[in-house]
Image (cartoon, rainbow, N blue to C red; front, side):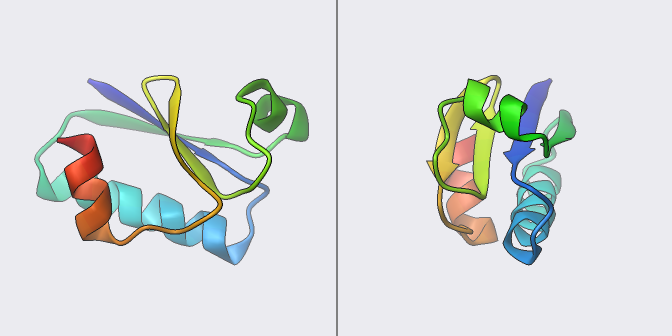
Length: 77
């Protein structure tokens, strides 16, 4: 099971990243858990300076942009 963590304060871009990440995981038939990390200390703990960001299994993969569902699918495969 993959752990997907959306790092951000709940802004519209953060919500879109969460939506796209879920869509990508569903299209790939992945077993996944989605967690939204919205507290500043939690985000800083990942070393992220620009949100939104996506961590997969604890490793930041994308920061500062909202990738498309297709981009996320290739990242999650």
